[in-house]
Image (cartoon, rainbow, N blue to C red):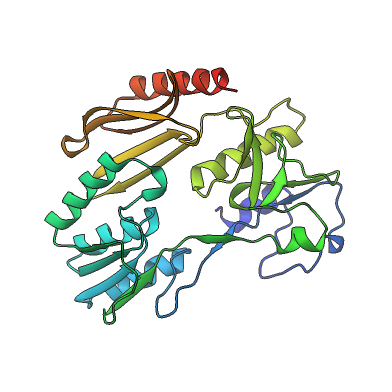
Length: 294
């Protein structure tokens, strides 16, 4: 993240290549667990998590003709798009009936299906088996949070390490942030765990302020984004609890807003081709909508 000299200048003791079996090995007034998550492994495929993974995949793509990519989330979809743009013929295998099924936005997913097929991707939706073959085989089937340290310390763990809106565990002085944390979201008034780098970055920035004495807490409308073949979409909020949806525009034309509502309250939106002002207004509406249904 920084040149090694930066850590010395900031009086940070950096220990690389070390592991911990227990939090009791750490002598500190404050401990932050930011151990992230590791990819679920799928037999016969490689995972994609680190810079080395990325560089190795790019190098293999130079001589590859075909690839099999498994998974309909942003890792699988973005890898398929990237390999296709590098001239590799990709078979993309998705267990669900659509890509990005977790987002619950069929109009957006269907528009992406058209784009992938137009680019020559062999898109196999609702698949129950992974085909053989492929010079490259990559699995993007989710992650497992690295909660082992928390378990040995007796911390509460559900989908991740349970923390409040200030990222504190029940053990004084111990915090958890990022992919590993199941945090309380006061906007939606429930616990959540989000597997996206922007969320982890926000956690780290906010906890840094808290540990420096600021009166901060988690207080944003969560956001997610992805880009495939130059088409970028964003999701704001959380669709859980919606009872109807409304589509304005056309994802195929890269100009759309897909709203998730509960009654007249906006809980979530998936957008493509919108300006910053529109996106900011949607986030404000989501914040008010989430508060109105508590």
